[in-house]
Image 1 (cartoon, helix red, strand yellow):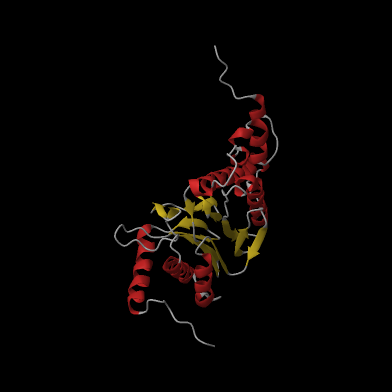
Image 2: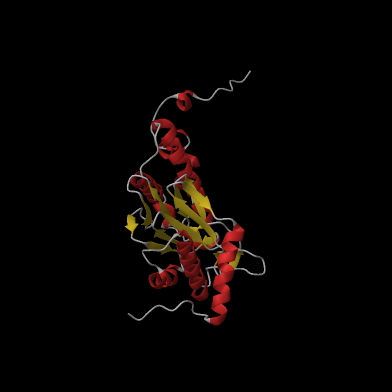
Length: 276
């Protein structure tokens, strides 16, 4: 008769890091320990692209387009790239889609594991540091073309404000001010937000600004998907406030996108900013 009980290591108090625990108990399950043939493997998997985030008085918003590409081929039209990390934070993915989704799941488990072991939640800086460690562990795969570059944002209950963190492929962590974007269309999205962002934006204004930025990114970057009016596919948008995070329902995002598209019919390049 087999023993169905969990091994003793699973019942013994240990590290608060789930990634460290898994590295000891089942290291082959970590994406970073996976063996990959030598050479550039970047063209073998779909890539996700543009993610944008912006703070507003009382929170932060993050949005991602829905396109995944393999070279010049559209691999998927409705991929989701923005996920809740926990109740007060979200993470958006750019780079190799499959590995990025695995990293997000590992990060979600990492935060939940810490809360169960320590009996409290990680600070905002602690969450950002844990994500940096996961990215750093993926450096070997990144050097073979399987890079993952997320954008992390959340509401800091101690500092009482929304915060945004960006990363490089080596795990370098950088806190951003007001807004930021990652992915192939990020330069265009950031340029758009530079003209549209204001300190006095409310939640709806911030959502409109990031959707405008994604529209501008899709206008100039073929790897970024714009609003798909035929299939009614629109960006995934998450809003995080002191009350927690929520994904905006599709009908709410589509209403904003429809207003933006109607305005672009009159002014294709979008809202004009004052010269001074």
